[in-house]
Image (tube, rainbow, N blue to C red; front, side, top):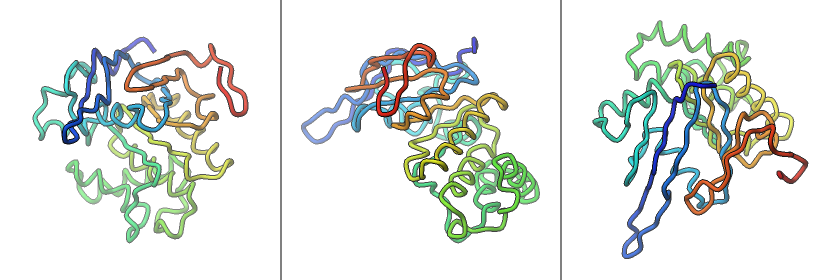
Length: 240
């Protein structure tokens, strides 16, 4: 993991809430490597989601620089940012965010159709990535016909559809039971290792930390700690 995919320098984000200015991110410096599995931890309001939004091109910083694959995102037009999001980033949400009226294939087809694929191309690719996540026998099932773990697998397949360089996963195991959560963690780790996808996840799940390459702690909008997995001791209920 020697190639820097994401470079963050002196990144700042401020929000004006009436007469109050909130400093959500303060002078963040961070390099994320291609193919890395990075877990981000921090209390509610620490800045995790804001950092995710910056990397995912969903929001622009107030200051500093953020480059992905050598491209400074703040310099892109809205149209080019939309293209970047559709082709470089895959999003996995805690609540799955699947379209309830459509089956697994159609849900995965959506980002492919938006990126310009024909219906036939989108369907072929959707079936391919659903097979990768182990759902080749659930292609025509709607979300209400799938378990929570299966729904999250559909969400991961949708994130993979356009062959992104980065997957951003926001608490992907929070709504799952222990065993199912472990399966999703193993799947994300496998994608990172075998497909070279950079996985960045916000999590409180210590099992997810165990498969990470590095763990980043954020508090009060700042990087408080960044360590390699082998340099920490993970036990039930604690990390040291």
